[in-house]
Image (tube, rainbow over all chains, first blue to last red; front, top):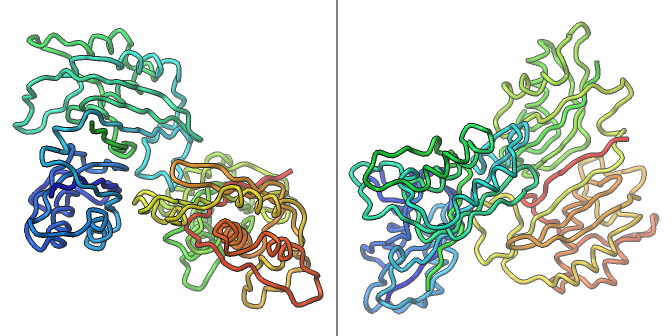
Length: 252
Length: 252
C-alpha cells in the first residue's frame, strides 16, 4: 500500500531534507521513524529538498507500507510521531494509488517567506524571518513580484549543487508571486509548478535588493529571461533560510 | 535619568519575570545586563510579572541610569542587547519623568492568547499555542468573551501566590475581550486596566471550557461577580502558559 504523508518541521535543528552521511536530515529521521513502525527498512521519497534551516508546514512524502501490514493510513500519523523528534511532525496520512510519486506527481508548490522590518528582531521570530531593520519600498517589491510572475527561464535563480547542476530545463511557471503585509513586515508568497535549487531564496533576495535600490527592475527583467546557450547573469543575493517555509504541495 | 525600556522575550527558557534565587528570570537577566552597561548595580522595575513560559512582545520596565552617565537613551537598546541572552531583546528605550513607574503608571495592558486547533501541533507553534485538537464553538467563545468584558470582581480568576494573595481589590476592568480567527485556530485578545495573578490564563481556560460545553455561561456569569465577603467559586481551568503573550502596555 502506497501512502502519502504530510509533514511539518522546524528546519533549525536539521541539515535540510535530503539524506546525508551525518544522518541529521529530516528525510533521515523520517525514514528511521517509518522503518521502526514498519519493522523493516522503508525508503521515503519527498516532494523535493529543503535546505538547512528551511521550515515546512506541509512537506509531502510517499512510501510503501510493507505487504501484509494492515494498519489504517490514519494511524500512521501518531505511530510515526512517537518515533520522531518533536521538531518534526507527521500531520496527515492517506492511501494513494501505486503510481503516485511525491516529487513527480506534484503540480504546484507554495513557499512563504517572512521579512521582519522591526528595528530589533523579536525573540519569537528568531530563525523564522529575515531581519531587515530598514524600510523597504512595497511598491517596488510589488512590481518586482509582477515581473517574477509567469513562465521564465530561471537559470539565473538556480544555485549550483555539486554535480547536480544540469537540469534538463530551467523553465518554470510562477503562478502566484504575492506580497502580504504582516504586523512587523511582509510575507512573500510564491506558488509555482517547480522550484530550482535555492530558487525561492534567490527570488526573495532579488525582490528585496530591488526594493533597496540595489537591483534595477530592468536588470531583474534581464535575469528572468536568459538565453539558454549564452553566458548569463546571476541573481545578486540568496536570502537566508530563516524566513522560508514550504507551505504546501498540490497534487492532481 | 529615568528610562523606560520596552522588552520582548521568548518565555520558554526562563522561570518567569520576577526575580528568583536561581537567577534565571527575565528580570534577573535584565538587571544583570543593565548593571553591566551602567557599571554599577541597577534595579529594574517591570510593569508586572509574567509566569514561566509566558512570552512578551512589549513588556515595559523602568530603571534609573547612574548620575553622570550621559548615554543617549536610544543607545541603551544595543548596549543592553549585547549583554542579554538572544531570547530576551530590548526593543526601545526612552527618557521618562522621574515619577514614571512601569507598574503604577500603566493604564492598560494587552495580552494575546493563541489556540491551535490543528489535529497535530505544528513544530513551529510548539510552546507558542495551546493545542486543542478538537473543534471549539466560536459563538459560545464570543458570548463568553462578552460576559468577561467590562468591570467585574475577578477574585474567581486570581490564583494564589504564596503570601501575596491579599489584593486590596479584585475589581478590574476588561476594556476589550475579542476573538480573532487565525490560520489554524483562534487568538483571544484581552485589554484591561490590570490583571490579577494568572487572570489571563484563568479567563482563557474558562472561555475554552464554555466552548467545550464544560462550563455553562450562567456559571461564568456567577464567577464574574463574586460577593466580596462570601465563599466563592473558582475558575475551572488555568490555560497553559504556552499561548500567552504580553503584547503591550499603555501609559498616559
